[in-house]
Length: 413
Ligand code: 5CA
Ligand code: ZN
Image (cartoon, rainbow, N blue to C red; front, top):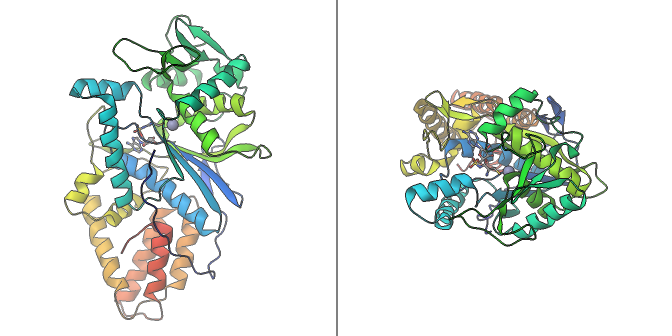
């Protein structure tokens, strides 16, 4: 699938040393340093294209963009892959409700998403992969699970024995009853008769009447959700078999911790004979009117609507950076208007002939980012610099700061 256009990133001057990036790893429940490496492999779960792009999506992709930008600024290469769940139950349900074809709905939403990501200055993935185009890879992945004797059939559908992975559950840390409840809420089928274990994951769903299907050795049907992400990640990120983990970062919002990332990791472990991700990094949920922003609730604020109202994308980034990525945020219009004012003030300060010293500002914002993306501190560092500049402190170089803000924060000023 076509990605969105590449952006040029100004180089940080070599005078700035970037410490190793620390991130909160859901699997270890600790903030950990990501050891310096030449190549990082990052997989971020992409949209199901039927209601793009709301601020929850924007927050999640902004988080991984900041990680991408930081790791690239250290001089490393970042292989970054993202999927599109362009066939799944919710997409089919929405298409049916609206009386359009699922593929047209997906295509229009993917186009919207690409435009929004480009507007938001999110660096594009090295590979942007739809599930439909990845079906041959999914089939090969399922065949590997079959060879390892970890699959079984329930009627015409195929399941994975989740406990084939001895580490099942260790990435998400929920109790059995919590897992049961969440699994049922997030697309799982713990009650289905014929399953060996309630948590076993659907690998291949036989074609249902009125639904699309693709030929496979397991019959005509379509992939289950979790297998799509591990098949795409393992194929496009090309893990090094000598590494302890197939990839460095598995990312997404915290709604994916269980079952999605737990199940993908379990399947991947059998397919690749390697532990899946070194770190599981999750963004908090963005909400509106007291509830998580979600398509099913319909309480959405769209990036495209904000931009149409004249909000500048840098202000959207600023507004979302006001809270720590891992925490939930209740959105309000006042966050947007304050962010727009602060970004305008930043622009005016960068345009001054004389500005307060900039090198320590860049050092401080690098330090804040390195500490589990402390973006509230990043904004405070910039606010202190604006105050100093406005009160007549001199000695800085606005161009140097503007380039650092572009390269590390994706600000276009
Ligand atoms: N296609 C699957 C992942 S394979 C999916 O979850 N799609 S999604 O469209 O529902 O979400 C896309 C990404 O945005 C996911 O990483 C999800 O965790 C994140 N996300 C969804 N809603 C929110 C929200 N309200 N706040 C923050 N992130 C969200
Ligand atoms: Zn996913």
